[in-house]
Length: 205
Image (cartoon, rainbow, N blue to C red; front, side):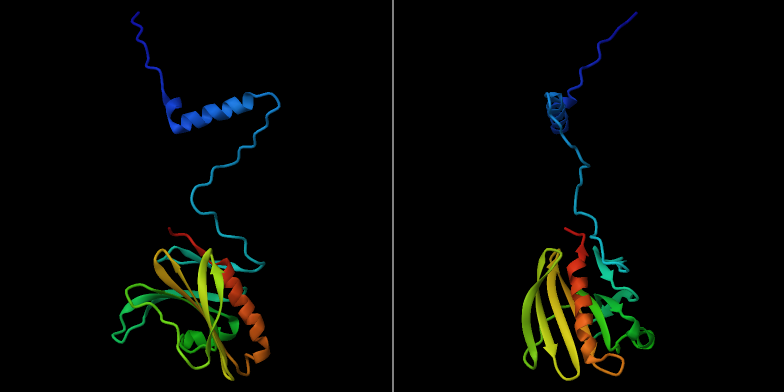
């Protein structure tokens, strides 16, 4: 019978093998209890949303945006230059009161939230002068976002500007007063906008 010696495995000398040996040694100690949980690599999963909220998962950029109950989300490429080059990603979050008009004219809705991501077009620039003010900063998935606010007799507008993966992300909220949108309800709608900012998730590097 020809018996050949098999080489001795040295896998324990790898970083993973050393870790296993150390864990086994700890478990062998008297009275030692070690709780070993799952090893999670990369970014944690999306947070839990308030009841009734759902997720919009963008197909072009690595982010998830929360959608309030009854709202709709529409993502598409949009032009932002005079030659109408499709150079900007735009996601519209549309509340029920604006959905009938949005179907016929997406550019003319009295209320809604937009997420704008310049791709090959220039970055968005904050408005200057008029009734615009610079508000406190907000935190959007760990990134600091500068906020800009305009309030007048006709509407309320909010912009929050953050950067993810070297790219600008602009969060825009528009609320125009009218018969269907009384000014008294604006505070509740701004609260929804702030919830969107608070729960936005970027999955890139």
